[in-house]
Length: 332
Image (tube, rainbow, N blue to C red; front, side, top):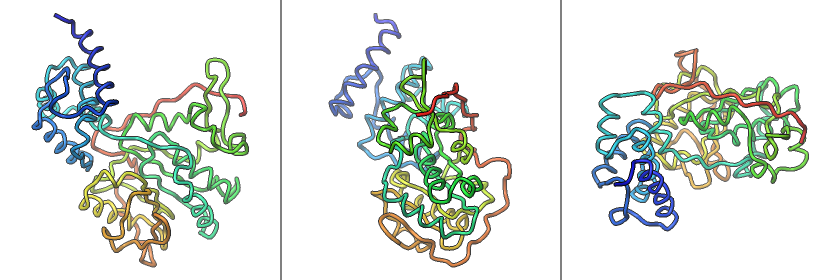
């Protein structure tokens, strides 16, 4: 009989092979049984906890990512894992479950047409400006926003600007907070941006870069669940970036999120969406202004409810303090 370690190692390799080859569903050989009932239960749980709607073609992804949790916990079936998840209601395991099923694909200045629009917009706004990046992932998007504010407003005005960066996934927030990236992730940036905004790693950090402290200080990273009924935010925003996250929500959830955005925006504020997202038929609060850029339709911003002042963190799974990285000191 194979040991569990041997089974786990071979299963990890098998999961990767099946995903790469597109093997699916019922016929693939797997380390654990994974029934339709298991997948439907996972879909219901992640929708209830995070508003994410898993489509049928995400079945292999759900198996591969959650099978790692079964192995880590020494469990033998998805049914046992899901039973334990619901019965024990362990915040840390709910966090691991949610993190496993969220997808984080991002890059610096992704969907680049948005940033000149943001730059032109903030120049005409009352200072200081505030921007909320509501799906921050590993940080490339909020750092791109902060760089844009500095380039548009100058160092002095940008230091007064506020950038809130939130995400449901605490693991990616820890990476975002550290601000350390592989060279391949920034090599497409201009030499001017690399020199102005990054430090180059040397020695054991060779091949890495780190955002400069003045850029990092512009951003506040917090955990927040967009499906929570109360975000606990007291400030209003000139612009909200909510890109490539609504595609994981069904229409009712999208409408709820947009309804919660509306009172958090200053008059004539802008909402930036992802390239495959269309809010035109979801809400009347925003009108399309340009390519995946929406403008708030009302003329006056309502003040958000004065609720929690301590944190914008989600209560879904308990926020963790992002880990700090070792310093990188040389200029790029």
